[in-house]
Amino acid sequence: MKCLIIAAGKGSRLQSKFDCKPLIPVLGIPLIERVIRSAMEAGAYDFYVVVGYEGERVRKFLNSLSERLGIPITVIPNEDWEKENGWSVLKAKEYLKEPFYLLMADHLFEPDIIRRLAEYRLEEGEIVLGVDENLENGLIDMDDVTRVEFDEGKINGIGKNINKFNGFDTGIFRCTPALFQAIEHSSASENNTTLSGAVQMLAHENSARIVSIGDNFWIDVDDPKAFRKAENVLLKNLRTEKHNDGPVARYLNRPLSIAMSRFLVRTRITPNQISIFSFFVSLVGAGLFFIGGRPELILGGFLAQFASVVDGCDGEVARLKFQSSQYGAWLDAVLDRYADAFLLFGLTWYEFQAKANENILWIGFLAIIGSFMLSYSADKFDNMMKNRIDKFGGIRIGRDIRIFLIFLGALFNQITITLVIIAAVMNVETLRRLVICRDNDE
Image (cartoon, rainbow, N blue to C red; front, side):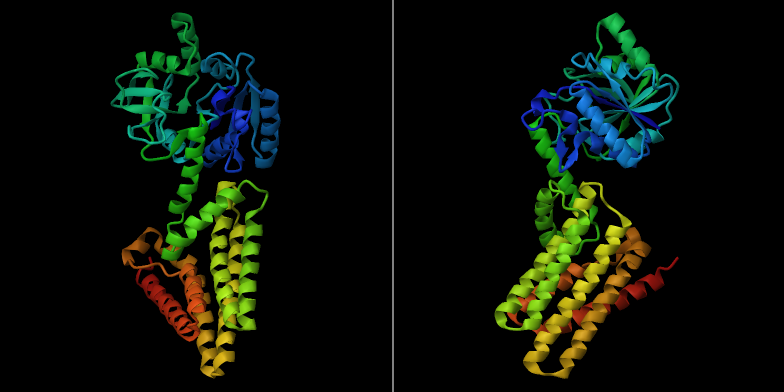
């Protein structure tokens, strides 16, 4: 479906951060690019962007973005950008003769909101607005938000100053071209060229509907405070996205890696470069194990754990900068397996040199095999069980626990017992997964 985005305003309250609001980088990605990518993820494919203030600058960026993403982006100039936002919408009248999405260039949102709007059966002459029914939403600026009063899915009133309301306007619409006629009618009869005025006009005709956005995230990035909130929420969402994190990753590694990713997204460092860096840090740690000596052992353990934290950054940066790829995920997995082998064999060699006991080599071998098989079975197990994994309870055994055990073993110089625990836990967990998958194969 076609998508109209309003990006004509000056955004004076954010000029302390950047002089062109649509191009303000939010965690390394311009605001308008985040809006376009979210809409693309929800199914929009043809974009029309109304520009005004710094219009030529925005146009050049959008032309470049169109080439990078391989999507059509039509830039529509609005010389009257200082007027009310309805004028910007009207500029697209000649381009949109069929239903379309209407978005604001400064409203970040989860794609599921558009998917909900897409499911609504839009009748001729109607519009439907995504409404936030959470009146306690801490991301809302109550002094600036547009309020909505609705009943049984029908909008009765909309505006920033209405006293009776039960929802908030997210600025995310699905419209028929009737919106253009409503703006013109509102301008002629009420001298009101705001978008809210047109929606109110359609509401009087029983043609303005709402769809609840549920608990999906959205925010109007209109001032420095909202900007900080937006970045914090995007970073916070990284924790919930990784539902299969183990306990060490969730409670120790992830908070640290997110803090690092906040910095890394503002650089040109790529996710694959982060993966490679993490791997080389692990190699240095393993090399210290091979060298032997108590100080080297402790430092190697710290480097192994540090590499495990950094290893979380590649995926976080990839998601924040829309750089996720199958190759990147595969590269990360391959490097992790190599890193695990070097670290475990380094520990094994350290202990073998110290005790000259051949049994250490066998224990180390079982630890390496168990680690490899656990990692190999992880994707297959998670894919088969999907949302049913939690049914079997307990702690999710993964690489985060394995590396943390290596760190603890090196720190307290308990190498043999560490290798025994890793060998036992990794192999037993692999067998457990085989049994669960066998019993639940459908």
